[in-house]
Length: 208
Image 1: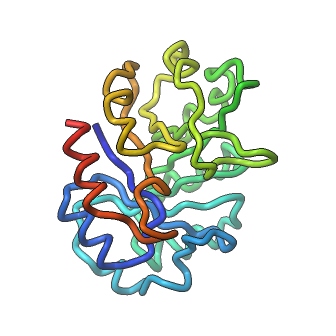
Image 2 (image 1 turned 90 degrees about the vertical axis):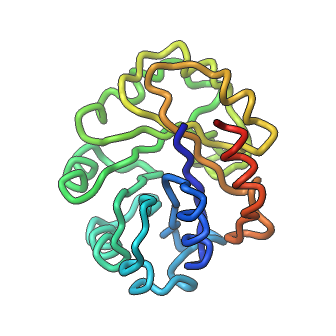
């Protein structure tokens, strides 16, 4: 099972995640996030580091030029789009990097396959997160994963939203042919943007 640790703000922690064989690390480019990388990470050091993990830039309703600049400045491997980005934008970016399109789920979400249909041909992965009141994910809360097990989806996807170390068994029991990875963030932190690497390692071992 692939693990994505999101909200990294330190080069040292990127190196530690790589050393733990974590597959994806998320760098948040949303300026009002407490985990915004623009003030904390040296772009040249990130770009020139030799990592096996994939560096994922996380954006919400960005300008295309800002995403392209970040891809170039930080050497991003993947772009994760968290807002109302169009299929056209996903398609344009997919010629540069891999694309993860995020969909926010709540109790009113009825049809996952209808939700993702327009993006099926234009991105590489989906990520399903918990819908916040009046917005997208980042709530630290879980949605009911059963809605995913009933859907076809037919693209590799990540489960996100309020996942902690205590959820490893539940995650291992969840079954879907396209279930590809788990996205974790706030429940593995000492403070916003600073991960507890001992917990990350425990989670990695628990997910085996």
